[in-house]
Length: 163
Image (cartoon, rainbow, N blue to C red):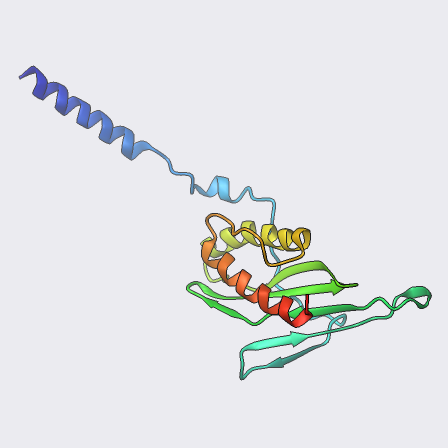
């Protein structure tokens, strides 16, 4: 009889502890992320050609550097990669054969969770591309689907840039 009472009390205690546990997906922790990815604006600095039939766009712009040296800056937009949560598309800025900027111009934004995940993951992916100068970057934990789409579009942009 004593064992039965002990077992029942132990089970109740474990259940109370289990249901009172707060997971790490609380909104207070997620909103504290310092990174925010802004959608791309088509400003006057870049000219783009887009093909709606293939679903991808390619843009390139070049400028001559000051003092007569010819340093080219070009922008390459990779093909849109369709993921389970929506399309992901990456744009690279290349100057002098080096990637100077990478950013996602299209990414899932339909829900608050998309905003939270991509607000954290995309700046990390963008920074890794510039640091490593290639598509050999790690995916971001918790944003695997977006990371995979990012890598597909990134490789397309790198292929266009012939890097």
